Length: 379
Ligand code: SF4
Image (tube, rainbow, N blue to C red):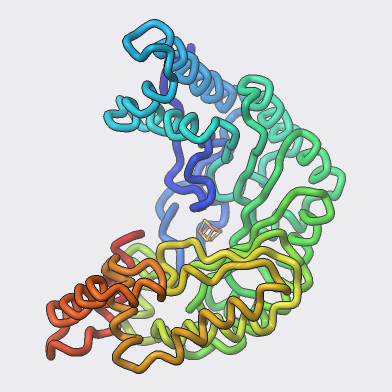
């Protein structure tokens, strides 16, 4: 029976904000990483192909209903006006997702949850083909995958997925340093990251690898940066995206931070780590820092050509006086600044100074704990 709602999982990458979300599997089959709380307490499930197809049909029904509404009602044939009205007052999350997707052309689809690649390949091929036949405006189909699963897939299977229409896979590489991967219980080695990544690149599917800045804490930051760069250089993905470690209740890492086993790096130390990572990168990826948790979101560019430009942004931050660096950190974490250049705006600068007075005990220095807390509000 067709309904006008479909299942939605909890997350998607920032770059898939305007994609149609189709939940092909539920939760995470690994679910043990210490720094991740998203699916803890939830059991992994492969959804039956027929059930996923029903969700695709439900998405189509909502889309068709909105198009019909644009023709028949007071909206003067404007789908854009209908979409805006739904976004302002969505009857459900499914409608909201469809409206958001249509507002950006209805071209992208993201298959949830954490490791869609674990599905039997023929099932995943069938879902992707059905999705593209049912909603022909979709030109880009993407999903999350684990390196370990990609390392086990046969090249012919990945090629079949690419031919069916799978355009890009997003992988949480997190780190390329084996002792850190083991400590964080990532369930994958640097060698498996390389094999999985290379399998994907060679199949023609575009690959985006995610790195967690700060994952090594105060103890392993240096090796985290240099070994991660080595692994990325061997994979040579299309994109490298960074996000910064957040530690929240529900993550196993939270307890280790509380009892002092894991000591977090400060923003300034993480910037030094990022510098070392970029200096050691020797590949052709497009490097992006578009995650709200990153201190310096402006670090972006095509490697290797833009490396100097990216390192210059780091150097601009590092050459500020200690007081100005603190002003930027606090201003960025309370949402005043988007980038370093915003500090030239005297009103913004003054607002950041006011925030420091309000959030610190002595009126001058906000503690690292408070700054972490401010960053983690966004997650
Ligand atoms: S594999 Fe990904 S989703 Fe699963 S526990 Fe690890 S970080 Fe979380």
